[in-house]
Image 1 (cartoon, rainbow, N blue to C red):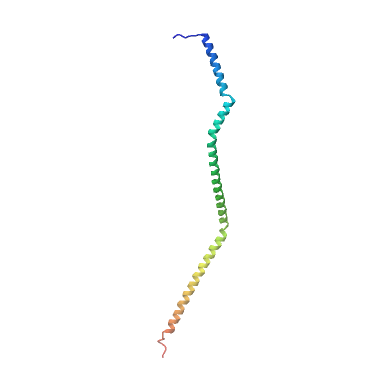
Image 2: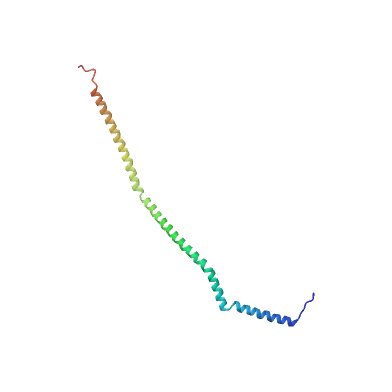
Length: 131
């Protein structure tokens, strides 16, 4: 292969390439083109960002509601802890009431039995007693 080294052609090629590169650099960095590209970028990226912001706000409201629910539950649990002594007193009083109820039933049935025995004794004639 033979190489052609035409200095004039190489010189013209370098000049054309340099001018073309300079023009491309100028066009790429022109302020109006930069603003166009910036506007294009904003137009493409802002709607998804707004959608994400709306989603974040919605999630924030839901999270706020859950936060209030948890705060309320913690307060309820703390109030239950404070009720231990009154609940123990109630339990003790219920035990006493059940015990007293059982005693009353026992006394009632005992009195019924003794009154029945007395009634039976009065209604039956005594065989040992002469008439």
